[in-house]
Structures are given as structure tokens and as C-alpha cells.
Image (tube, rainbow, N blue to C red; front, top):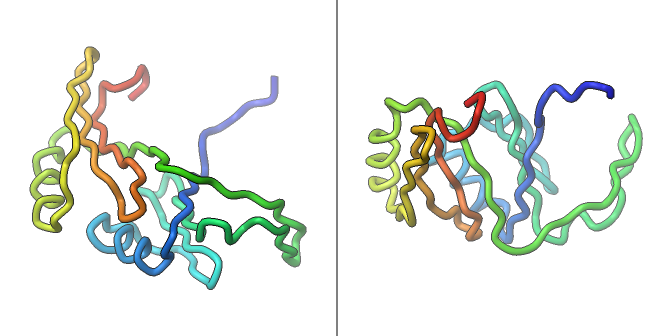
Length: 137
């Protein structure tokens, strides 16, 4: 079996690219790596990239100098989890409150990790998870 090294990109499809960019680059503090009329790319702790595309805006192939990107899209409230250090959990909870972001849930997992759940402006479920949630994390 050929190896897989990890997940490189996670994609969210959004209704308003500027609004989503303000959220992910603002209260979430992700540095923008790239932006143009059709997408935004954010660094996630140097270990991955969060891509934002306008919903319905990637339904046609995109020709680039290096090749063609096939069509893609998504609908409905999606979910992603971001890993955080255990000692940052309380600070994140306060930070979200300062920015008026409501926490919808908090779960302590059998292995010992804790997750906070909240929504981005497009209704996607965002999870902040401390170590212990999964084997290897």
C-alpha cells in the first residue's frame, strides 16, 4: 500500500467569502496564505490549510498553468475540529465569549480530551479539541 502522510487541506463552502474571511482571520486568528476572487487559504498551525470557497463557485473546472482543478462543492453545515493544547481550553472559551461566539456544547471524552463546539458565520460546526480525543492525539 502506498503511504498517506496526513490531511493537507480542509475545505469549507461559504455564502459570503468576505464574512467568512473576517471570522477565520479575525477571532480565529488564522494567517491568510493566499486570497483571490474565488477562494481564501489559511495556515492552520503550520500543519494544514483551511480553504474557503464560495458555495456554488467551484462547479466548473479551473485551468491553471500546471493543470486543471476538477469541479467541487458542498452544502449544509459541515464539521471540522482544530487541535488545541489542553492548557489553552479556558483561554479559548474566554476568547470566543469576548467575540460574541456562543459555545453550543462541551464534551469530556473517555480518553481524557475535551471539546468545545461553536458555529462559524455559515453555520459550520467548529470543534476545538484537546489531546486525548483520539489515539495518537
